[in-house]
Length: 187
Image (cartoon, rainbow, N blue to C red; front, side, top):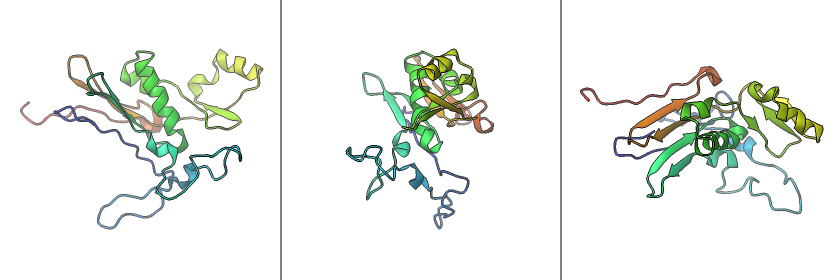
């Protein structure tokens, strides 16, 4: 979200599964999540400290990736976030690299097909990447893949060079999203 003063907010709304923990905060009307499943419960290598192990005051890595990009004058130019549990980090990263490195319009970067690798033997691919010739090349050298119908559901706002803001959401994933610029009546 961005306001008329140029303040932006990036957030991650993720409750792991429909209904989250099943607990609603009394008087507040929102569900608590059950993101405990996004912690690692055993280190990948017992000899190396795993910062994603659960503990007091910690959050799983998937819940700390809302992203705000600043220009060289420390003004926000882009804010991104996504639900998606363990796929949040890869969703935000691929959207960010789509805009920053590939110079895609924000809506196209959000709509681009995604992959998700989370320190497992296989990498998840959306259908748009499944038939890629790169996949066959990587399989030939030992990489494994499995198909995932959708990875994440990003939204974002971007400040354009003329100072206007564009808002963007998924076109198809999770039934498509809604993003718009809202102005007070009479403006």
